[in-house]
Length: 268
Image (cartoon, rainbow, N blue to C red; front, top):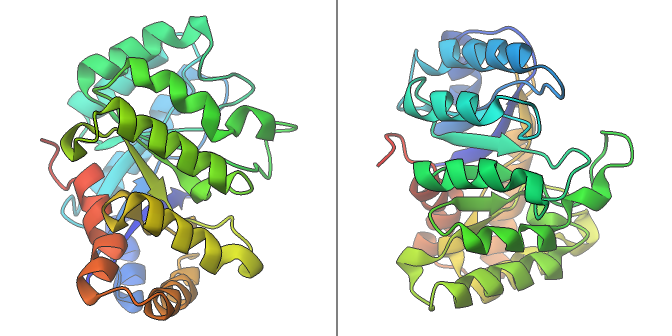
């Protein structure tokens, strides 16, 4: 089965060969690599994006790029556009860092991303860091993006502990698209989050409500040297899918096809 991990963080220096070796050892065909976080500096954000680009450029068919940006940093919309249109990144990664997605001051940023038809991976759910930042990461606040229908976005971690709220936002976006799959903006990233005692339920509910076409596999793994967790994530999620009676095609869609659709190897 082809495996694509939609959620891998770059946390230190590495190179393409080392990254591919870690992926090959675990049977992972493709990853979406997220540049290192930076909360305040535009220049440092750009440096981080360029560091990730050096790894991605060595194997763009197997390592896709998500540029980590903080939209409230002055000049960030231009850097996000550069990452997508010039630097080869498939999309961007955003953590709502003590701001709400519906704030008026963010509208110029969303307008710019709408014009670019940007693909965005949002952190949603509990946030183990960024001070007391979890309250800004509820999926409900992303309803604002209904006004920017060219943006395609995924809610990471099934938004745990707000998993049902995540599904409500999915339903809202589906209705806004007139129930036309080609116009539906939102996806779910199944990266944990979700603790063992509710993992099966959370996956089952997401698949039942949205279909496997809107659900994609991720691990929150890290490079360099910290991808070994992928093996456990792959095995445990596939075991749950088997318990749920998913077909081979449905399982492969979740494990690779959905991520390839939202974050394609070559942007359309």
